[in-house]
Amino acid sequence: MFFFFYFGNSIGRLGENRIVNIAFERVIKDRIYAEGYCDINPFLNNNHNKSYFLNELQRVHSPLVKLFKEKYPRNIEELERIMLPLLEENEELLNDERTVDYNCFVIVYYILLIFKTSTEKLFFLVSLCKKAEFSREESGVNDYFEIREQDGIIYNSSLIDIRFINNLQEYIVFLNEEKEPGCEWFYRGHSDVSYKLLPSLFRNTNYLYNEKRMYLDLMSRCPADFEGLNTHFDKLVKMQHYGLPTRILDVTSNPLIALYFACEFLEKTIGEVVLLSDVHDNIKYFQSDKVAIMSSLPLFTYDEQKDYYLNSMDVHTEEERQRFTDTINRLVYEVGLERNGFRELIEPDDVRDAVICIPQMKNKRIYNQEGAFIVCGLLDEIYGEEKARSLSKFRIKNRAGKRIICLIKGSNKKKILKELDNIGINEARVYPELDRVAEYIKSHL
Image (tube, rainbow, N blue to C red; front, side, top):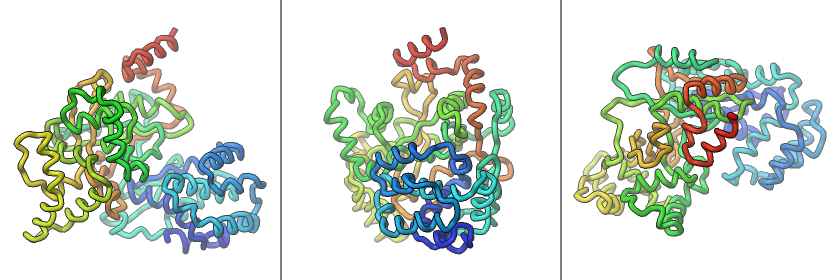
């Protein structure tokens, strides 16, 4: 376990509890392993009262609701008395993938209430990360893992370069300084830096296991909406537009649009503009065979997809190659139905890859947002056991080889939105549908 040997006397016997260790792993360690940084601001300030947690925990039927019906513990002994019996009686806290992340967050949040100040909480969390033994193999770091903290962001400074943007001018100067020729740049705005760089399908196992059912059900119930869409990629784009979880991720070629999304909501949270790039030759268009291969995966069950993934690993011999080819015959057939003349063998890496794809600008929102997509295949961290995120390969690096993390404090979001509005980047531009344009007009009378 990640923190088992490092809690010491800070939180008493809770440091030896399996659920507590897993909670800290999922909330902090996994994020640092996956992306190299983690926002701990939600734990530093007590922004939520008991009634908030009571309502949320009751909504998801979590046994942790009992924690917030009592007085908060004043010392370690009271913390142990309240939490240990509850955790020992409720091992199922970790079994439900729909609620496990929230349960883990609440456990960490509640434990940290024992510390009286934000400074004490910060010191505790940073100390845990610094003492943890991040191995070279697990972290993906070439030499070492050096933990630092800035404005509530814990990060691996050997891998990550943190940049906070205070206004629009700073943002433009920053981009001009970093941008180099030879690559296409893309951007994605997150109003909360804690959001995962993953398509919505992969953020919930219930969605993942039922991808085929969702895909076919929507087309079955709304056939007229898919008339004239001849490719699975076009269908996924439309499904994404209307909120169905898919294996594609929205990005934009316009950095100002991404900045708008990073500042649009959640003024109390740190926003992020995710900076992404790839070489020109790797960028795909809507008619790409590789895009067709990955966009056809929703036609298959999770078990079938897992079988494709496992058989695509370590294909070295002719026998292994033949086994992989036999396994994916149905996938080849499906792509062939969409693309006349498709007879090429699918390479094993093709089904596990992710690519940036330029779509046809078939609707006004994609056109106005200068949209593109990352189309994801059978990603290693979803179908395998890898910790690092596959999409991190697209993150832009500085000249020192560190990933650049571009952040916006919540206190600066409103100001930046006004600056963007002055140059025509606003709700009416980003959401050109009639109702959203009407809302923009009303709000600017």
